[in-house]
Length: 141
Image (cartoon, rainbow, N blue to C red; front, top):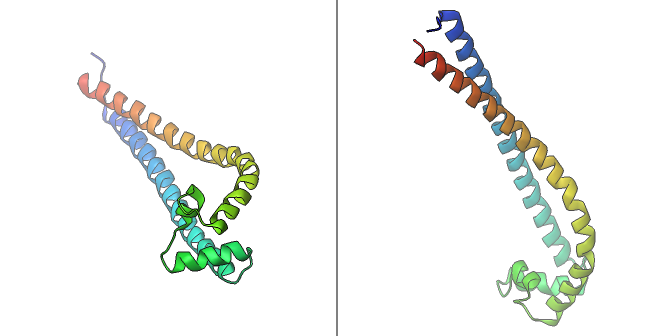
């Protein structure tokens, strides 16, 4: 039976605390970033809606935004083909032609997310290893 002293236990506890702090920090940073992005998206959406009302995106969007404001349609209905008005059909054609450009930007966004999740996964693995070591030491007492 291996001897376990207070220093070994303290080292394991310190490792657990460090791993837990890293997970909490990464989680907090991810949550904060998500909240910032939601706020930015809301501001951008409101700005886009105002531009549409002013006709900055063309007459089709101006008409559609008026219908959205009156709750006669939604952006989702316009883009998904539920709204079959001539304006919605025109907007869908334009969206279709711009889709290839948007698709080319997706890999960069995914790469950023993968890096954040890899860091979190690493911290979780470290915590699991430390917990296993603590259980092993506890079992040898």
